[in-house]
Image (cartoon, rainbow, N blue to C red; front, top):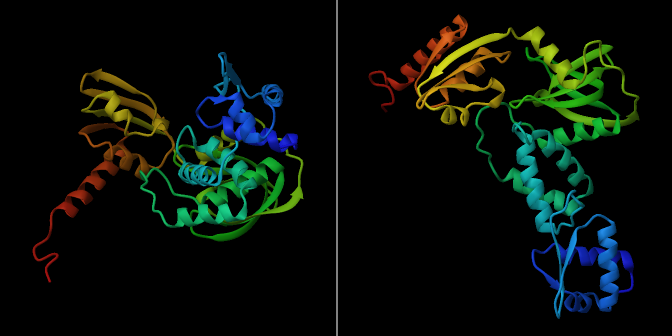
Length: 329
């Protein structure tokens, strides 16, 4: 194989297999001399790939963990598997991996051949995700279109459904995608309104990057980044709740069932803990998340949360108490 770039890619593909390759076997596979293999190994090292050589009568090479993440070569099956997994992680705002999933998915889908895009879409359409109910699901394609427009500083057109159900068409300069752990939001400058706005991405439809580039505007005074602007926007629409709840279970058990955004738990013993935090999430969402912890608990405040839990408890009690004749045919 005389084409050096093609040979290097083939060599890298072989080395990514988790095994040690004798130099003579690599030379035979690539139809070159052992000396050429040694030079190619040095080239890969210069590019940042940590290739380790072992001593001995035969000697061998293998790719090991380094200090930085080098580019990887993926075959078709691997690319499809990763894309499906990233779509699952991006479509539900999973705390800790959500934004990284969108960035990685955007890069991967940009280079996926059309035949593989079709396979990824077919797999996703044929499966139903089991979600935790933390927030609305989103078409990952919507996220990748928006993320690409943010990165390219490209104006975006999209349909938007407001909280009251009103439909509108928007044209905006997208600044940042922000995940709260339960929902995705787009922070953007709305060109029609002439002001900064935040949009819930699960209410966005048919996003389209127009191709028109823009120079990012300065955020409003006091807004250091997109997350800060979103936080200020949410504070104007949702009152702050001072939550105080005691659970009859260990802190580890409760923490595994509560979103981290609700704050840290205070252990009160081996089998109890307390949550004292503030939240701007809706009363309905907080009440539901507490009920899903699957252990006994007592809400000390605020009063409106205690009332909402009472309403939820009464509703569930009625659902569990069949009325006479109900369900009979």
